[in-house]
Amino acid sequence: MFANRDYRWVNELTVKTAFLTLLYNDLLYIMDSEPEIDRRYADLTMIIRPDKRHGKIFDVLIEFKFVALKDVNMTGGHAKALKEDELYKIPQIIEQLEDARKQVSEYGKHLEEKYGNLRLHKFVVVALGFERGCFRQLI
Image 1 (cartoon, rainbow, N blue to C red):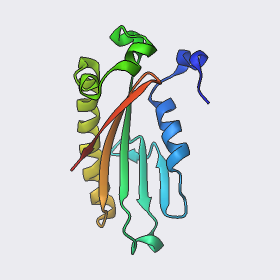
Image 2 (image 1 turned 180 degrees about the vertical axis):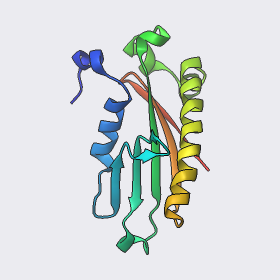
Image 3 (image 1 turned 90 degrees about the horizontal axis):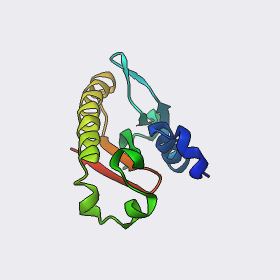
């Protein structure tokens, strides 16, 4: 459980840890945190195990970003009170979503080349402190 004291060290790794805790499934996936892709590192890949490719599940690539509340001059209460459309209008969120989108697009191409038969779904996730998160699925 993360608490206010954890803010001192929080970054996208903290967000990834929360997602890994919820998504971890080594029966269906080869889970890989920070796999090297063309001398860079994707945040999280979930590649369907070869013996499970017959199912209707997807390979997953997720890139995480973090925006600190202090970087947007907000309190936790203010972040919680934001409407979803307001969240996506914050310049720092827009910037991180775009940066992550570029990374995921590039990583996705390399993963497709490496594996060849992926049913890859790509996501970008941006956390605003511990209070809010937003995402985009790339097609």
